[in-house]
Amino acid sequence: MVHDLYILMITAGIVALLFKLLKQPVVLGYIVAGILVGPHLFGENLVNTENVETWGNIGVLFVLFCIGLEFRLKNLFESGKVAVIGVSTIVGGMLLLGFGVGRFAELNTMNSLFLAAMLCMSSTTIVMKAIDEAGLTKARFVKGATSILIFEDIIAVVLLVLLSSVAVSNSFEGSLLLNKIGILAITLVVWFVCGILIIPTLLRWVRPYLNDELLIILALGLCLGMVLTAEEAGFSSALGAFVMGMVLAETKESHRIEHLMAPLKNIFAAIFFVSVGMMINPSSLVTYWDSILFVALVIIVGMIVFGTLGCWWGGETLKDAMQTGFSFVQIGEFSFIIAALGSKLGVTDPVIYPIIVAASVLTTFLTPYIMKASVPCYNFIYSHASARLKAKIDAREQQVEKAEKAAATATLNEGPSSADKVRHAVRKTVVTKRVVDLFIRNMSENDPPDEHTKE
Image 1 (cartoon, one colour):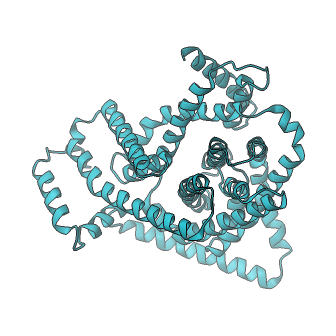
Image 2: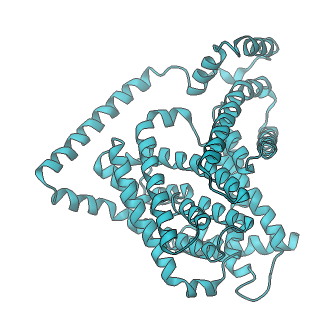
Image 3: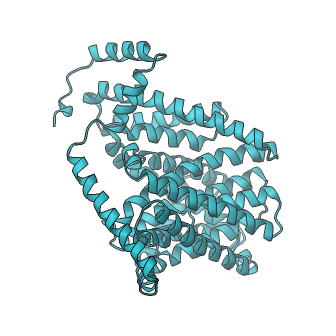
């Protein structure tokens, strides 16, 4: 096992460093490292595949846990309209487009469903990295883009659960699917509400005794506990990790936990991407090059069109909408996870996996260059637009500027946090008021002095 880890780390480190020097995303380096140590290139395994798969599964949990930690109710409420309409347009449009591509390629319903799910999710990691490297972190479109990405991550987790159920039952019944969605929605609400009622109070109670070591151990324990709870309830382990991240995101320790989790997430996420590369047969890339180019083109065109339309309909300026759409032109970690799920359950054609991964690599490579083209494309459209369209574009610009000024004024008079509002609302319900009040009263009586809360 130590030998396997050594081979993985040294290969991934060297290749990723090379990609970094070439100013390419290190994720691509990890995938290439996986191809190098995998069984297809040299005809033998340099590492134990089972060990790598186990570490990769742990990496998925840590990645989803950290994505959950970035989930903020307040941020989503602030950009709710753009996020909801944008993600609905992007995910809905790409699901239909992906399913249509699958049927056009004469794939069966199950393969088409999995293919559609793989094509509808942009990579949060790659998008934010590309924005950072382009020096656009303070750009106006980034806030809306980030909210859309978070909503996409939530939908991706839900899709993982639904696809697992559909694949296991090997059927696609509307009533069964709606029933599963209803159970999932109720379960998520119960977990989240119970979590933000209990866990912040417990953390506040023990906060004076929490150093970095104890905090990360406690956070990982809570994460794995929710993973086991999700599995016992018949849902995926990924859902449990994500939900616990969402709960901890509403605590005062969220940023500290996120900072402490970063090294673990980076290590195991790297192993996951290496495991993805190990499943790629380079010869299949040559055999299916036309399919890879076609899928990549579908991703790029579809994301630009649906991303721009969704953000424009959601209330953004045309320039911001285009910058968002042009930055979403790739697929990433969730697409790999969904592809791996289909392969693991044996319900997808083996050829889909290398095509999806190769298309992801190609679109990731092109993302920085496509992002740079967004502003020139906007200038071209604006300069050639009719007088009526220009008036709409200018009016939207003025509308957004007014909304920004109003939001800045509202921030000065900011009240309780979103989590506090949810806790307050739940505590006031007829069913839970007495139980929750009694629990919090008893906990508060035993609370030790907390000097950290005084700012």
